[in-house]
Image (cartoon, rainbow, N blue to C red; front, side, top):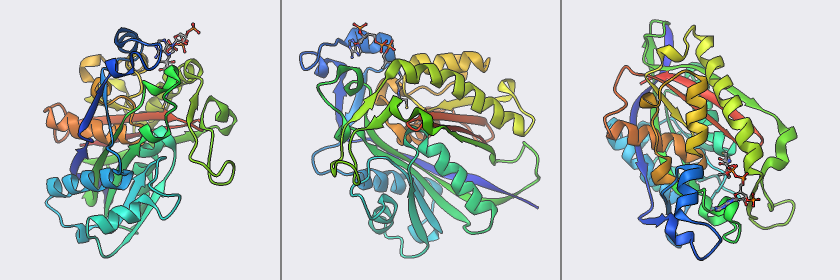
Length: 324
Ligand code: COA
């Protein structure tokens, strides 16, 4: 019998404070009009002082567990995708484990920046298919507001804070693409592009957290091409193509990247879940946020075929095909 990692529950959390584009006007040389036109972003959420990535992750985790109708101890593992941990160590995942009252199993973080959630899903899938875990909570949680340079207009307007989570459970399938659950994954990275998107500080260099630096137009160029390619590859692995897709649930960085990728995949925008206008780029949290909001809006329904795709610093990129 084929084992599938099937979505049992989904949830999200956004910090209370909403920051509209107009808040950046006057602080840096920008305008609401420019930000909307060039990125599609209208607002984003910023964590309150003292509110940490593990707080956001734990809130999303509780929502996903409630949606699944499960207690924390029903989980075997927690994976958190994040690049903005509370502390250098321990992992955010172990902090979430304590906060939600999970007293068994194991927890760890993965770090692939904006592609983090795709990497985390692929790892959770591997744990489930290899029999090492039956239920895995996969969280994407970020507080990118903490690493923004608020004097750099080309980056500070783009990012936001938030968290989303999905409970995956091992379920027997038929081995066909009609099965619910993760059907295929595709992961890639190329470390030679390090300088396109990075943080200029860290434990073993400056000893500081540092600030995000990006050559936006260069990243943009890679994004559309690599996202369409990885989505095609993941679909082709199981004999599917863009025409089979009910929803693209893309990483939410820029509406022009989302539209360009959908066009290359020959999927109309009516079949793309878009949240970038409300969340900005929440890095590893953007896909689980979009999954949760997409379900809440009534867009994503049980049995729908989804493809997620994401790219970020590294460069690292990838995609996951799953039937909801
Ligand atoms: N307000 C006003 N002008 C701005 C601005 C802002 N917030 N940010 C940049 N500009 C200016 C630039 O300084 C530049 O001015 P110049 O021509 O006088 O030098 C001009 O706008 C064009 O800059 P460019 O970077 O070529 O614009 P763009 O159309 O590529 O848009 C991004 C900039 C950052 C929105 C876009 O490149 C992008 O989204 N890139 C991908 C970023 C991303 O998603 N990264 C994360 C991947 S996980």
